[in-house]
Length: 519
Image (cartoon, rainbow, N blue to C red; front, side, top):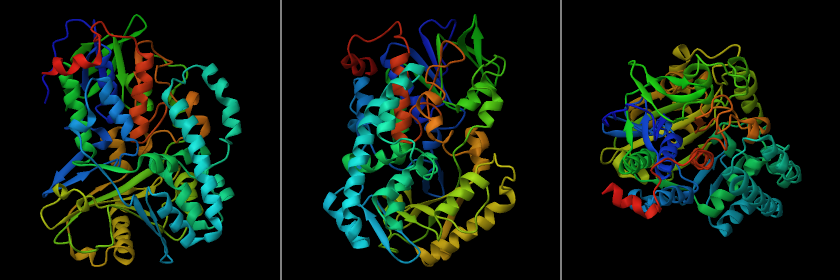
């Protein structure tokens, strides 16, 4: 645990609430801007949802498992006068993932254009032309949605008005699935081109078609795994912050954001200690920030009733487990598999609209031990299996105390039948996260997996701003603010925040000075 800094006054000090990737990236950027930064986090290790738990010789990566835009991390490190690749080793995935449908058909995603076209032609030769058109669409949305819109502040209404014509031209009103359906006819290809928003908490049948850009991200930058998991990235970020003279303090929960003369003035921890600061960054969910951490300060826009009636991302049921003596079993099962259930549209509707826990499921299966043997004892495997489920905000919410084990058993049965025969006899360690866990561990509203759902009227200017509308001196980072969820998204929130935050009193003259200061 880092030593708490003395804090007689807040001059030159910045406090970050939460050591998730967005909070740590914000701390790095603020340190580079000349602020003395302290990060307070309620968990026992950095990373937030990207942290890990070790159990019985297995390391379970709890949240994000891949890196799709390594350059965003390299840019972040460069801002701090460091080289990302000196601190973290990324391994490119080939293939990216394999999709398996109930009828036995499969689709293997790779970065190579010829290999991808061969997969499309194998499933549906008549869709090859439409697939190529979809990739062109994805590239156009990437150029505008990621490189332009996603990397600049969207806190003024004029920022939104200026881009509305481009939104209209790109048919941002159309959903990702609707756009895929206009390009390809095969329902399996429509799934393969539209499911990606689920990994940032969005309903593919309702989130904007701007998220088709993910297909271009994969094609242009590949899919990577960080050796040591995303936890290794979080630990490397912590080292950079400490090298800048900052502090990352674990097991330290912020109870309240302090306000003085109408400005954020620091934080109070749950143990009663106060820490003053000139600026405060909250990496907590915006709803937690505005309804809990600012409970003694009146808010105008992001009130509790408004936040609670917003559309939230789905919940997640995640089963983490270890297996004994399986390293050479299931050779066809790679690092990432997606096992698709019998229904798509109807299942998504039950998750996002009705809040009904379906009898069937679709699964994302992560087997990191095929790439990183350090996650499991020799000869064994570590798995992470995720199923999207309703969040806790629906009228008849799921009672996970009663449903968790039956749901895990159904998941086990599906895995044995479709992907991992004989699994039940091999399972050793086991750990389950439900939406209840997300609510209690991460203070996630409704136990949602990715904060506010990224619908068009909950994106960009419509999302809680990186510079608070409610309190001068307060900034927001993480999945619930602009540009949104996912590793590139939360890293991007810190980039936007840094463009809005003032320089600190100790700004380095050049980034190259930073490594010297860390020595």
